[in-house]
Amino acid sequence: RLSGLQGDQNRTLILATVDVNQFRQINMENTGLFARSFLFKVMCVLIMFLTANGDVSYSVPEEKKIGSVIGNLARDLGINVKTLTLRKARLDVDEGSNRYCDIDMNTGDLIVAERIDREQLCGPATTCTLKYEIIIEYPLELHRIVIEIIDINDNSPAFAKEMITVEISELAIKGARYAVNEAHDADIGINCVQSYKLKENPYFSFLFHNKPGQEKYELVLEKELDREEQKDIELLLTAFDGGNPQRSGTAVIHITVLDANDNSPVFSRPLAYVAENNKPGISICSVTARDPDWRQNGTVLYSLVSSEVNGIPVSSFLSVNGDTGVIHAVRSYNDNTLPAGGTLKLHQNDPFGASVITLNTTGDEEVRIA
Ligand SMILES: [Ca+2]
Ligand SMILES: [Ca+2]
Ligand SMILES: [Ca+2]
Ligand SMILES: [Ca+2]
Figure 1 (cartoon, rainbow, N blue to C red):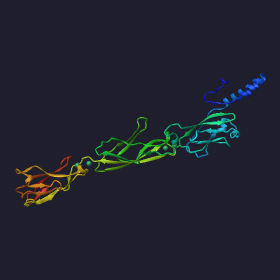
Figure 2: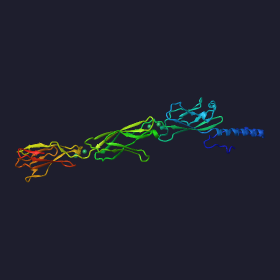
Figure 3: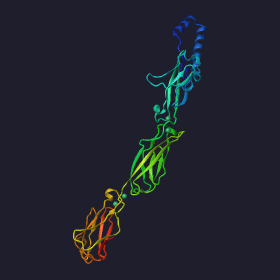
Figure 4: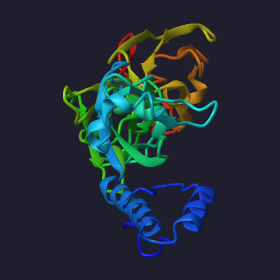
């Protein structure tokens, strides 16, 4: 029995065998000093192994060239290099799994045997280790080898989409915030995304908070938008990691400024003249107004504001085509029937608000539209 001979937890378990038959035979034949001496020698050898060997740990950067030396196993395990082959030193690797490492039997080095990609091996885990057992025979020894794989900055930050589209109303107020998707970097720690930079522009700044659980990636409106001034804005957002050399990734943020009905129609000319004594039904002139808003918000409809001249409704003198702005005489008139100072009103129909132009008779041969 070898009770009391186990090493501490970091020590390697040493398996030693003693031929029982040989021992019994010796014991039967020599019940004296020789047997006690043999047993003492065996125990001394076991104690020596238990105290001389332990776990070995190394660290190696990922993506090292095949054949790169991770460390000298023979030296670190205290084994004579020349005996490695004889003692069948080998790494215990499950069939079908990647080896990644191997032992150079000539030098005793632990070497890189396959590409080691930390991202593929461990993903976002903050520590990444390869664990092996090394088996050495005659006598049988097992050692645990732990290899820490160090991250290198071999990935750039990247946005899920290189073009991020955001729609924002032109009525958005200064200080409004808009979340955008962050960039990802397959590396870890300092080699991961550390900062963002938004290319200088008059409209937006970028807010980045990376406190765990309170992450924020937001555009902040710094200057109010005006779709009529600029309906598309392109921003350049760059994410940087903290590696050396630093890597970065860029996305274009395309802002579509959504229209609001924030403009009234404006008549294109300030004055129009029409001759009096027209025949009923004749077109006298046309007026146009423009509204810079989009579609429905910019559609202009023309109509006469109901009013009277000398007690007679203006609609009995003139009519206007709601879509085209063409004004027709409903009946013949002159400066007596549509006297100087009389007012006809024309307005555009806009949900936001109506502009009004006024028809003034000039007293002579023209009706003036102002
Ligand atoms: Ca990496
Ligand atoms: Ca990186
Ligand atoms: Ca409008
Ligand atoms: Ca507008």
